[in-house]
Image (cartoon, helix red, strand yellow):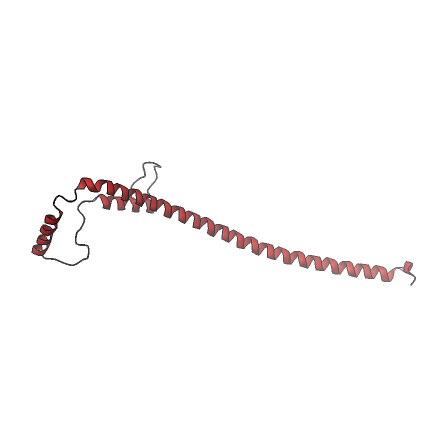
Length: 140
């Protein structure tokens, strides 16, 4: 859902996916337990305490701000590249289809022209032979 403020149109699926990825990057409340294993509250709490002890004064949110921005730029560029690839592949398929159709039409046209040439040549040979055999100017 949503409307693109630049164009005034509904977001495309690709644009919506890009926006969702950016929102996920910005989301600070991500699930730390991504592997799906279940931990009881004591184990979970103790692992958080251990991580917080290790990370004290090492990495701050301000340090990650530029990294998040760069990830957003990379996602946007990747999305643009994928869109361009899809557009070019669509054009290539269209050109390929047109080339096949033109080739088939040329083959059909060549066959028809050859048949018409053979019929006209046969008619000319028949007419000339009939005319030459019936003409008394040649001494017959």
